[in-house]
Length: 177
Image 1 (tube, rainbow, N blue to C red):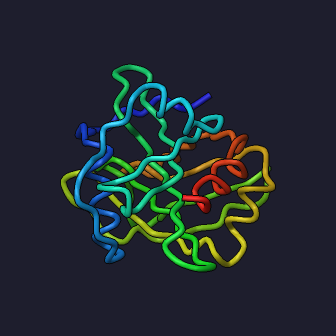
Image 2: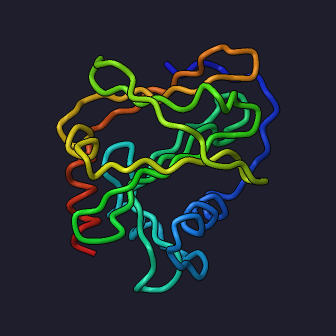
């Protein structure tokens, strides 16, 4: 069960966060494409879904979002992107109010946390990009459960659980786009 989070949080557009992250990586994105409910349902893989920015040639990502129970605000957005041959990135966005020096952790199936630094904050939240082509993507595909962890400004850990069911199928669908 996700921990209730009690710090200031700005609502932000998932697309705006994605655009900020893709801008960081130099990937061009034009705008959001509206998808029908039927198309959206076909692009769901467990707790993960494929989102694309812009037209048919735009960047697409396999996305997981965690929402705060009290107001359904996004408290974590994690996107798996495949920008080129053999490359894999995870772009993560958290709300403002996180402890930047403590970084962001990823734990798969109870293993130790792998820690990554935040890269920047903007009006949509605080962002980081993780090179997942060095084995992390394979761990996510083989795993059953992940925990994403960051800390509030008082140093309290905020742990977001995520099912990895569907990641393998979602990545395969992403590769086929």
